Length: 243
Image (cartoon, rainbow, N blue to C red; front, side, top):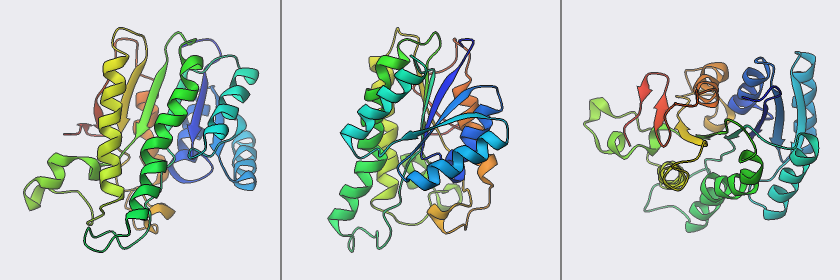
């Protein structure tokens, strides 16, 4: 990594994203707090700075092309490059999500944030990542995106409730990550998928059993991989997750 390592975390104003930013900041990195809500972003940056993190706000709506372009321009002006991108921002889409009851508009909305948003932000940041000596991209997914776990024996399933928008969005994100890894073969950019586990956040009504700090650990691990580390793989704290 460069002497001044620069990271951007999307959806970093709360929950897992905030803890990822805090964990990377604790390494002495400069961390961009990507968030669309101005007040929540400002509050998160203030909290991080008060804790000793070199944090700066990055206005970012992952569903908006102009916002992603402006965010890349801000980071270029601020730092000139980007070492680590953590695509954490995501939504569930609400209910109902049974296939026979879902509103197709719900699926479109979830895909726009959870999949297209990742592509949009990654591509906007790619020129900055290419300037890094050791660029890393971490896409935050979920075990609910694992087709193996969705279709396995009941005792092996950790696939959550039936959710025809959210779960397939994570499967799609996993597949997109593989395509990036294939395109980036031969470069120094490592891109992987991380599952934080079932974390108590407002995404699930705080029903999770893990803390946001615990959920952030896999992202921090993948963000700090050595140059000979893996790429195009899916991990949680226990190791490789089956696709």
